[in-house]
Each structure stands twice: as C-alpha cells, then as structure tokens.
Length: 134
Length: 134
View 1 (cartoon, rainbow over the protein chains, first blue to last red):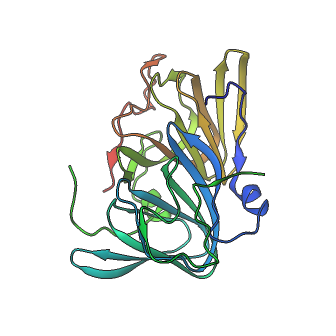
View 2 (tube, each protein chain N blue to C red):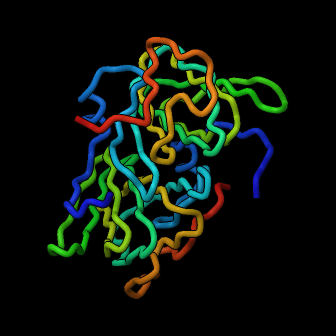
C-alpha cells in the first residue's frame, strides 16, 4: 500500500522515547520493501536464523553483542555505539545487550524478529514483524 | 559475489575519518542487494531523481536539508542529527548541508548518487555507485 501523503523526517530519539518495551521493534520508515526499525534492548535475545535475508544492525545508544554460529565456530562480535554489522542470511545468531541500549535494524518487511528457526521464545522477547510508531 | 570471510563490525566514526571527499559515499556494508553507504557532505548536491528506488537518509552528524519536488509543490525537509527520512522513488530531490555533516544512505547496490535523471553535475559532486572503504 503506497501513501501519497507527504511524510516528515523522524527523529530516532523521539521515536525511542515513544515506547518502553524491550526487544519489540517499531517501524520508523520503509525503503522499497524493507523496514527500518528501532528497538530498545537489554539482556539476551534468543538464538535464531533468518534463512532468506541478511539482517543489518546499527547501534544508536549503548553496546550490542551478537553471538554467531558460523561454519568455523561460534564467536561474538561487539558493536559499540555508532557501529554497524550485517548478519548474513542463514547464520544462527543471538543478540545480547549488557545494559540498556537502542538499535536500528533493517530487513525486508514481514521479517520476524525471531527468524524462521529459533529456540524457545522467552517471555521478554516479542515475536513480531514490527509495530507501527504510536 | 558472496564472501565467506567472517566480517567484523564497522564503526561509522572510523569509516568517516578514513576519507575526506565530499558527496562521495563509501560502502560500509551490504544487506542482501542493498548498500549501506556513508558520506561527508557540505553545500549543495543537485536535483536528481531515482526512478526505480526509494532512498533512505540518516543524519549521523550535523544537519541535512532535502528539497523535494512533489505533486503538491516544492518543499524542503530538515533532518537534524539522528533523524531519518525516505525519499520516495520518482521524487525529484536535492540534498543540501548548511555546514559539514555526515550521513548514512541506504539504496540498492548499483544506485548512482545522481540518479537516473539529473541536472548538470557540478565539479564538487561525485557521480558514483559508491566506493569501497579504504
């Protein structure tokens, strides 16, 4: 569905103050058939895999760790504020934030936060394709 | 071409200190068939149109103005640091930075900085599909 309404810029800081839920992304804008989402995060997400898409992370505030199960073994990458990383499609991964952080994620519209294959979903993780901004 | 080399996170701040050219984006990572590019900008870009793709902007440092020629007329949106905006495909637009700024742009790999239709390209604008990071 395309909108013909002129749109305005969105402040990521304003977007982040509009909700409190952790691991529950909000869609701030779309680019073709991709969503740009922001999320507040803290603690562990879960091991999951997107079989058909890469997933892009940008750390807006705080620090994000992403554990990766690659053919060569398991490792964890650390993203300080202002860093970016792309998890390749098919790579099992688990995000983790040692303290409250905020991230921007880019992925195709409809992509589930828990991927196509995943561990049991803990109560504190929202299995969603992203929520509209309030 | 897919790489099987494990990749590391990239600091956008480090990426931005690795080059000086204005309006000359560097590709920091790819997401499926999209590029994530960063650019230093100052002064005027040029009126141009991407006929087949939206273009996403995020302001990392400074302030970016984007003038837009929409069916309802011409307007300029202002993006302070930390703001995002998507220029819809087919919309003629001209970015402008009143002072030195840094932006992140997302668009399909191969997208030209000057679009499919554009004004005469001034000397200070690099017509490119993006450069590799040094």
